[in-house]
Amino acid sequence: MIDRALEERLRLLVAKEDIRETLARYSRGIDRHDTELIVSVYHADARDDHGESFSGSPRELAEWGNAEHAEHWTAHSHMLTTSAIEVEGTDAASETYVLWVQRRRDAPRVDIGGGRYLDRLELREGHWRIVTRTLVVDWVVEADSEDRRNVMGRYPNGTWDRHDLSYDLFAAVRAE
Image (tube, rainbow, N blue to C red):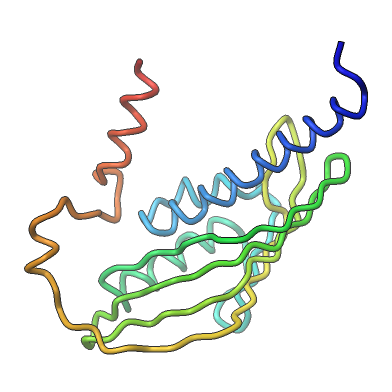
């Protein structure tokens, strides 16, 4: 028989892992320009605040973010690092550090930045989803970026849609 203290620790570990998976789906969705995947990390009544650039619903965020990325950059990656997560019942708060690198469309430059996602999440119908998100930008730099497409041609390249190789990978695992 599992004692109550261990049972509570296990419940918290599962909740925190579910929250981390939710946060990771956002980065995957934004980097693949997958509107439905982005929307899936938020509850329907959620709000996202990207400061003066954007504030709105999950679907509005996905459409705005995908359009901004497509207009201004040829490639980008959003990488999550350290997360502090606190869970109390069906409510949670998380602070997750994010690093992003974006290759500009109009010049041989990259924008590199670091910040934090400050999220309030709720467990509803068995799923942890974001209720409110605020992006805090801590720093941004730009750097020269020599075009290395000759190197990229030797490797599979990512795409901004469901034709990206990662979708086939996950579909194959689900089919087994």
